[in-house]
Length: 131
Image (cartoon, rainbow, N blue to C red; front, side, top):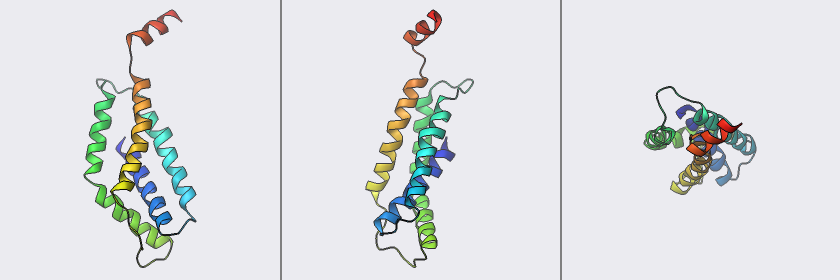
């Protein structure tokens, strides 16, 4: 789960930083990577059953908490990549906490739907048994 989230946040940060600095060449590509990592791979990870571990919300929350402590390194890596890709010596605008909040809001919305879909409820069990 963390691998998909790390990839997604770095791609998101690169796209956001490039946009803030008036560079758009790679933004569409980077955002399509974010979409793939969050809306497909993260969802698949959440929906995939793990033997002996049923609390997907707890697993997701723990992964997010761990990654939030490493946010500065993700920002630095994204900045390094944007500078390299656009041949910049420095950026005029940097990433900020609003950018981080926007990323996690996007992830949380998708994850919440996947976690909800993965939860086995008595109603779902009953509906499956009638099929």
